Length: 337
Image (cartoon, rainbow, N blue to C red; front, side, top):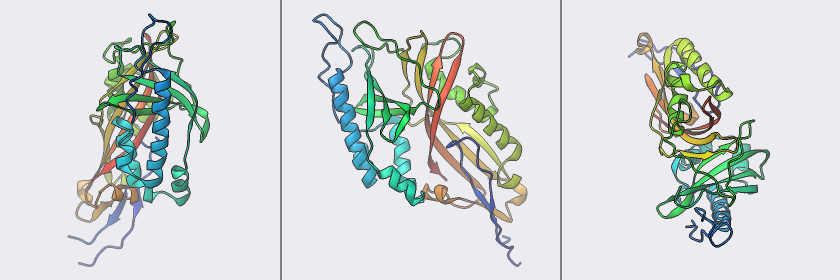
């Protein structure tokens, strides 16, 4: 039987940045630092912080220096000396995908940067193992970033990094010694605990928010996830020749971090992850394949009836007894099969 003419058909790109990917259809022939100098906040009887501000600065400075070197060399092992958790899982994949980027973006990524206007958010010693840094980047002077450093294997490493997406997070509550109040991630604030937020977000990708997602307030990240569900469930993929579904999965690191805010609420930094499955409809499987794009190919995908993409991410949420608001999410494509 003579082969069909090759005719690539691109899937429509998702409207939620970094949540999903584009696949194509083609017809085929038939057949650091330990921060040990915690110190006291002020006075002989003042409580100690998890680390002192001097130690926190030293840790952040060390991260900045090593991260810049690792980015310039695409050195995953070097990066692992200062990163862990979700951030490391996401950044390792970034290195894998680096060669698929335009040269201009590659050059910008490798350019050294620094964190400016830093504010150190340090819980009291014994209430947490971590501290946070609120800062602005030399490459982005408009929005602030919230960095979390936790002790991993005896060394402080950066584990989460959330940029404020048009909405600055509330200020943390500080006691008279200048220390922040860490909140147990399993403690409910209204309908949800900080540890529930990731699953509630994923529910919008899976069901449009019909289950756990009902407890989330309507914000831009949540609305975009709901739109992604609607588009994928009605349009599918490859011009309707394949189905497209999203499924929640456990994040690479389950750690959740939460702080009391000055307005009495709780600020939660949470991990999230999901799979995206594009499956060719049965009637097309004898004459067509889904073909991975450059990004999917770099992550290991091959052409066939099914392509499964995996995304690791992180998010920022504000919780009060009356509402749970996700204000920012960030996802990285980390695997494709």
